[in-house]
Length: 106
Image (spheres, rainbow, N blue to C red):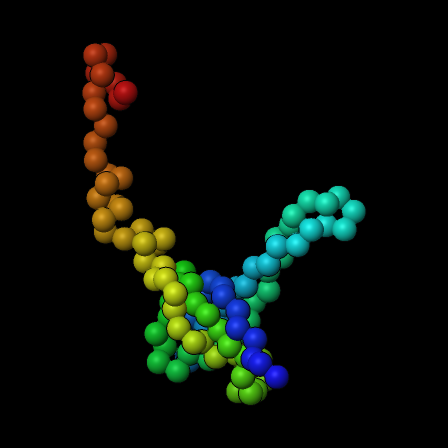
């Protein structure tokens, strides 16, 4: 049987060699026919403590590692530093506003 692979966002990296990954899925409400988002958090094993909160990672189902950990981090698909506000995006946001003819901001 193939192992399941999911993609989600790291929401916590407080524990040693463990990250908590939130996986979101969209489903249609059976009565209202509106798409709603459901999420679930998985504890995944991160041997090198490589991933931090905000990173987008892929996790794979594995043998039980502990009471709650049955998933292993395969690798990150995107670094979350840009989402947390990297140095390039902060510099662009802090430029002063141009003064208008009345002396106020435009």
